[in-house]
Image (cartoon, rainbow, N blue to C red; front, side, top):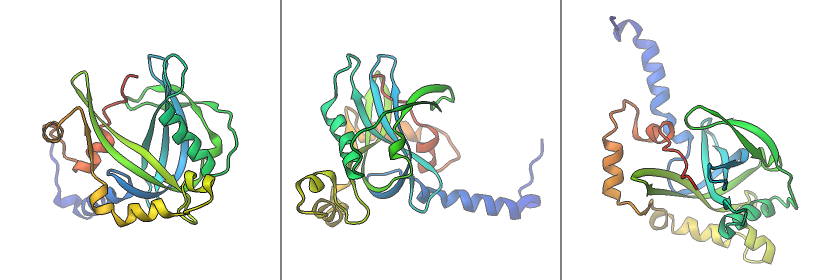
Length: 223
């Protein structure tokens, strides 16, 4: 099989330029991002625990990113208080007093269709999210998550705590903006940075590093 770059050069340059610039259209780092929520989903692990994620599109982008709130309900049905409160904070941001999840089906990272539950009240909402990129290791496998740490209203940069207390509106966002150069760093939980770097360097892909992160999601932790 012969492949000629020259005979298809114009189309090749057009497509490769589009690909090279695509990194800015999705979230691949810690920081603050203006996003639109496409879907807000509960998915169940084999253990019975329920994880909550946001499928979002970054402002000005067209590639979906998956933002993790973590396990909201443990396998025994009890709440994970931190993740549960983050979910309530999201609802408070939009003054949603209660929700009733709806069954839906989504494609898992491996391409399989799986059952999920959707909070439709959050769909198409715009907000600013604080994201923490975290690497972890479980059963000798490296996982990467983009974790939701906080969320802010677009209009006045208020988070849920500020809205509930009705004071210091926008102060947390302002602090994060002021300290973003030193505050937003990748987190390594139970794994060293050198090991993570070696893990990704060993994958002989033609895609750039950011695209590898999207296409090669290592799967969710099994709990």
